[in-house]
Image (cartoon, rainbow, N blue to C red; front, side, top):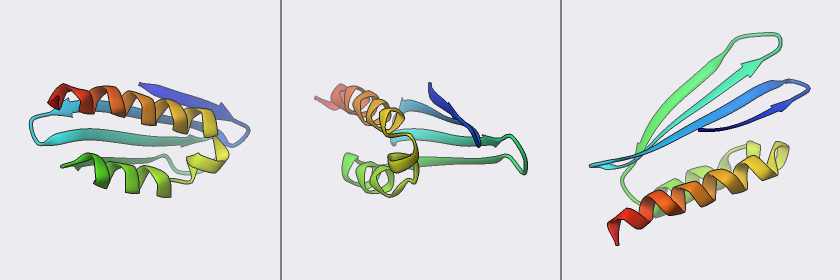
Length: 80
């Protein structure tokens, strides 16, 4: 699990390697407003990288974004 806290709230990611690829949960917990949670399974690295590069946390929490990418690379390495 990787998370970051900012003035607007908390964002969390959970990544797991599964038989069909990579399972990712993304959860936003704002200080005010509605909690948002999504779960996605990516069949390959290319699909995950495309999604990850489009995620707004790339700009709002760049260190979290890097951690997620590195951890995903470690999980994809199990295919090798």
